[in-house]
Image (cartoon, rainbow, N blue to C red; front, top):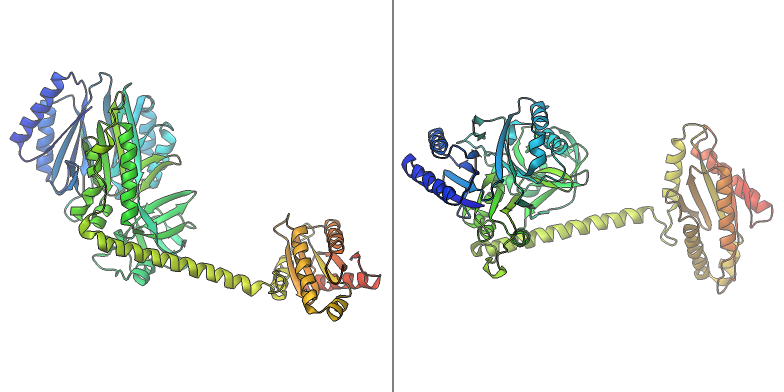
Length: 587
């Protein structure tokens, strides 16, 4: 494969360039080629003229293109308004074929029909590159249909066309005019053709997870019951003004849903505090606000470059989210792209969303960096010494370090608060001596369980336990020995019941304990009680020797209140005491 690249300046110079490309193809017997046309503000006249020249001088050349937020030229993120790339195949059976599909409604049925039609082409393909108009088509449906309609092992990568106040997001391909509601698929094939695609993120969570409590499609209404905009307003002091989009872009969300972690950013804020997101946000999922950690981002790029180097590419495609360009600034943004140009010639643009197939399917990311290395034949690996070091821009290094450390402080402090709250919550329901549930908590769980009792098939049991002659232990051997007995018996109860995490064990008071067994029949609860009685009797203590216990066991009856079943458990325990202690009585 051979990569060519040029800036479109005027028809005459472009025609000369295309003729030079064609001369190279003729000399090297290149039977097939494809071109990318990336427009960063260039007018329609230039696009039309460039295509007219390309089709007249190289009629067999396939081409695709889109509007962009920055173009890749010479491995640098540039402001050039029109960059054209040509990729020429050198192996005779390598080829590329573009398909453009108009998406007219939310079902994207036209894409489903297209995938069925081109199924034989897909089976032969070695990879599929995507260009899409993200804001005007149902991205979630498109990804689902691609997952269903493409071969499972087919690599997929690409980016979304960008729109701002000066340009409209559109895609186009050979034989098709620019469209604001379309997807372009470039299928590449060939027996000697190989591809390796990767995705880089580098954004790190900031604070704790936020539950999506209300969302409708792309409109995120509330997080943890509060307007979603509060995350930006309260914590980051980002106002809802004309600059909200660009300010919020530096703090995207990580969406955690169905085992996937996907980056999402806010496009706008509505008057009621709802956020319009880059794509659908599932209700009930978790979102984490994130920040760009320079060290993590640079390290991720370095690892990606190392992997692509080992692949031995001849051409590299780069889809770099314009959010990353905004984060770094135009001058520093190229530090993420330069290492790949040193490995092989690159083409690409700054996109409004990136696509890649991973082990979990075809994912739509925001604020990411997707790279695809391509080659024909065996890998020719670039020596490690030839790859430039990847490091953050020195002019921003100190401020970046400050931001990173501050964010780390916030995350650590947040985690400490979360853990402290967990400890406080646990202390509020725990008996300080034994570590079991305290009287208030076990009472509450009994009330909740039996208040929800609904019928004869919904039953639970209670065991009330009391140590026999415990006053004698305290009076004779002291309260320290008494505490030792209570602690060891509590541990014994937990050990006997450890097989069932649904069972609750609490200290009822003094030397009394209560055990709630959800779903246990009277017979099963009696067996547990007898096992407890034997285990307690087998314990040996240095001063008092041994102790015994009496247990009362009851199973709930239809319509029985929490107070009534607790009273029956107490009555069963009384019978065990009255009948000689160290025994189990059921009622």
